[in-house]
Length: 384
Image 1 (cartoon, rainbow, N blue to C red):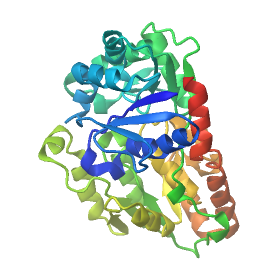
Image 2 (spheres, helix red, strand yellow; image 1 turned 30 degrees about the horizontal axis):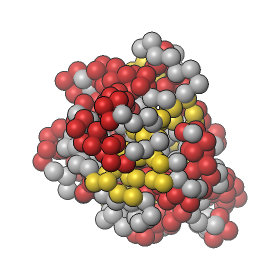
Image 3 (cartoon, rainbow, N blue to C red; image 1 turned 60 degrees about the horizontal axis):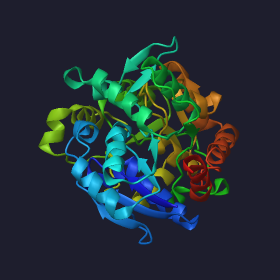
């Protein structure tokens, strides 16, 4: 099977913060091991040289990634590679891919992977646009472009049951019939970030928590900051907050200055340490190994989180708000609705060794089915 993997990397200078690239870098070699011939079309190549590389230009903004698919380049690439399957990691690009296949006279299956949903649903079933995609009121247009992408795909892949439910509901709202297109294929865990639970030592009365998510406002960073103040004041805990971006370009800061604003506030909070892995996965592993638990993001539309999986594969219990995929995936004893509940959970993790070790093992076990080989087998089954 010849697979053309169209990867959207919107910030190639900060690959460590791009879960889509990390996903592809782990999955493409596993697909190759399973017998597929994979070409990754991306601004940067995969780490495994067996994966063919077709260089592309990184879109300068998240909106260009959705509204400027580059038809001329698509047609040329498809004519050159003659794929049997085209993977669209930017769902909104699927109609352009279908048109490019038509122009290039190539018959291929289009498989769209919904890494990011530009919407979510409330507990009462109300569709809410993602504010990160709603600058100048563009959210509705992004939603309709996403729906057009679903219609153009032959296969639609999502990370989780929550993502499947939301995607199905959004498709129905926009009169798109998914039929039997939809498949749940979770992302692989990073083999470099897997630790034997037997090697984990519980905290001795004081615990270190880690928050390793993007600090955008739409990730619920203000809500996390509120909790961070409460935890360091009322619980035996210190927090490490990851700076995943470093110095961003002036253009990106102008589009959304919220990460810099939140980072500044967190950096001046007693009991909170700002850390960076500087794009080094070994250093990232060391930072995770130096923590006792993780904190999930407060993003309402969270259909999946690689950072949560990273923590769990290292045997770190992850606490999180009872919402979206987090409520589906995280152990019920570690979910909270209020800051008071979060403080109580963290106090117990810090002081109850038996409780801590039980949840460390459960966290690790929740990722056991996410090996690259297992995920690649599900991926190939879904796209065939």
